[in-house]
Image (cartoon, rainbow, N blue to C red):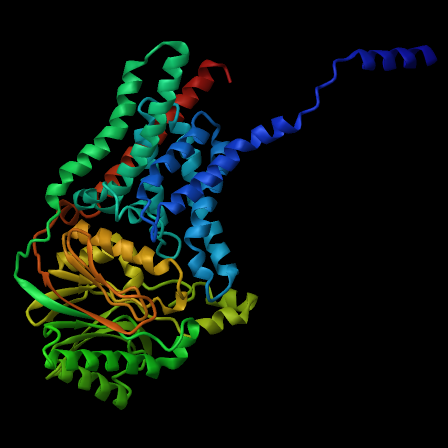
Length: 536
């Protein structure tokens, strides 16, 4: 027995031992994860308020490098890291006043969509012309994210980072899906060009078909964007109108502004009266249309006689109709409402916000959240109700389409106003709850994209900044500072023609979703055939 034991020990010693994994090897394994996360950060840096739109291209090129040829499980993880790197800094403003909990929870959920796209891209990366399928998959992911959960959250669409970029005219061709697709395709194509160039240098073999597809992936979006410039115009088709954008400011930033509703209304009345005095003195042109922000009168003027009197005084003083942002209770329901206030007739029309903000204007799963933390339910004591109809006010002959704040992120909400006859779009907003964060600049960029998408002047009246007037070509002609009382007055073009994007509506997005589905189906079928051929 002793001899046997000794021989076993000796045989064990003779077995080859696995070499210890070096620290350098471990670090090398982490490189793809680090690159995925840093690529997401690079994509974030391409977004406003910075004008580094072109950084989106190397961001997607690096993302392609870490994904191509990987398993879907690895792609899932790398996609999640990319999503975190992008969305964590992009959406930090959501926690400015309520703490990091909601911000982190939102990002954790939204990054799941990016993770699923990452997994799908690994599958199609083995196909011919893979940048095409991969870019379509990204847009398909954005399409889903814009609709679910809780009616969607489109913030962070690639298109919204391109307000200063060369690709912007493509918004007029097919809206945000086509604009975003062009950017992502160009980024993936850029990686493929570099990869094939290095491969041919090492092997001295040029795969012409693959190289052609790679070059086209970069060239076609750029050429298409240049060609689409012909669709961008700020020519007046239906005359002009002189608009006044009022920024009354708030007593102080943060959620507390809601407790100062009377003061906020007073500020906007005061700024309108100041403008009226300037008009009377001949210092400023008399406006045909006056636009107040969302929540400029959280005191319900239909229930509060003093609020009614104050707004009426402002309208009579300026001598023009005012679109007033109010909070109105009707039939026991609460509405975020725009009120058309005529200087002679008083309130004559209303528009109720249709795309209301979850966890801000209504609380999903209220009973469940209340059981977890009662403070959450106290922040949204009563849910707002949704409007059901587009809002187009006729103000001194001009048709003004209303898109209230959060709605500007949703393609359908903006388009419906244009197809309903809007010659000019107004995006009344309230960013006071987000202090001096990047949120107001991100939203302003959305409005610039919408201006080109539908070839309309866009005004952005905000309670505390940045308010702006945007031409149909996406250029800002006037803007205010943050947390200052100010007004902007300008003669702007009215337009009624429809861009291809307006006419096509959801069709370009659906076409790209079908392309994504076709590519993914092809990849899955090819994988199944490969396993069968290998006897697996």
